[in-house]
Image 1: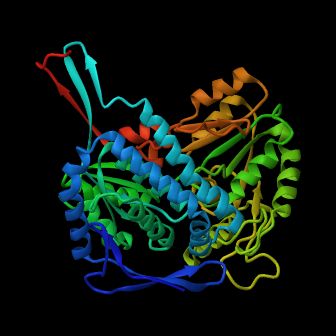
Image 2 (image 1 turned 90 degrees about the vertical axis):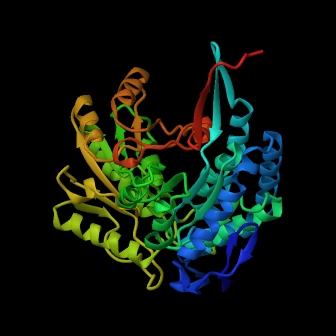
Length: 475
């Protein structure tokens, strides 16, 4: 069992002000796989002070030197792939192949994407007789979730480092092991002391302290909408910038002329990572003529989705991250049944033969209506709701009938219809016919899915201020 009770502050590993042990639980075994310490106000203050003291020198460091350090970090990240995969497997229950490929791979993919974006990023532009400068915003608090740990740490830390910000990372206390390993990599790469700091803690403690801290210039948060609202309120007194990437309840609109793999593809996408993705297509909205066949395919696909140990290779899904999440998902499945939806695959309880671990049966509901809780609430587990529609206008209205607006999906062989619907659904991202977004494309949502954008040049701009300078001759 890993014991990592120290924090990374000002270029060194330091003991917490007051030891406060927290056990990290392996969700596949329900046993502790690590022990960390949760920070106190003194730890938060020390980390913010280190970031503040190092800001000016790091902001003035030539870009090519910052880029060289980021590239070195990328090389270390690649070399320590298996360590990172094992940390993610243990802390949040990703099967080892998923952890070694998608979970670890997301971090490297975004890192290289930011390096490409930097090649075309103008930190100073001319506008007639003015100079328009893009400058680092300052000290950033990075608060990251447990479901895609390296995806989110890299999406925040790398652009902040690239543009010249300093930072304090607070990873989820549920899945902190991968972030501690990332801090080791930052140290090995040789970043100056104080540029990158890490303090473990929970949302009510270190998270709230960072959000309200007067010496923090920006909070970048990924997590629940509830927590995002709390962070925004805490940050209001100091008027710091708050960038939020929050929940989702994505609609997957499948027209009758969609390709034959559309339904199967949608179910697999929903179940991926045990359904623990904010951009999961959890509402499958199917044209009525194709609805009966869609139910058959969705049922077969869910029943064929294997659930298994995280230590074994394969394409199976693992457990959900914690007992709290398991109980929440079970409660929402029970609510769906009580409100009249029909379970056509999965249902309550663990998969057959499993009596330990937070494993959930891949579940599909039919006969779902917009009034039902499972239609409206983000379940964050391997649970899919299927609903019929009659007209294109109705499909668009149903897709938009949610407080969220992160990712919607459209499946049709009609190019004009696909673009027409994509333009009318209210979400920050729209994926069509199974084609994912390209590297550097902005990730973020509308409405209660947040207000920030991550990835590529948009991710760099998130950590910048804009300054206009007039009256200086331009050569």
